[in-house]
Length: 77
Image (cartoon, rainbow, N blue to C red; front, side, top):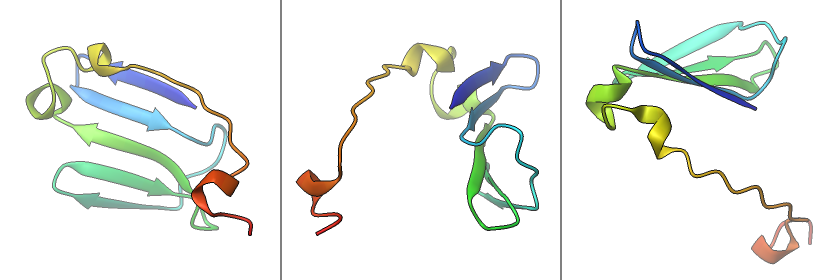
């Protein structure tokens, strides 16, 4: 996963799948979801990010990586 902020275009991009071609995109209220051919989400882009969040969108990142089997949430049972 990669998170980038483009100050020139005021775009916040969260990329989930690197090196996967985008087949389709859907924009809803300034949020663009990019899909691969198999309908997996490739990336999510936030347009006008500083107007929707804060002047410095990357300051919002508080990353915590939690690995789970999913059983705690009731998955895989």
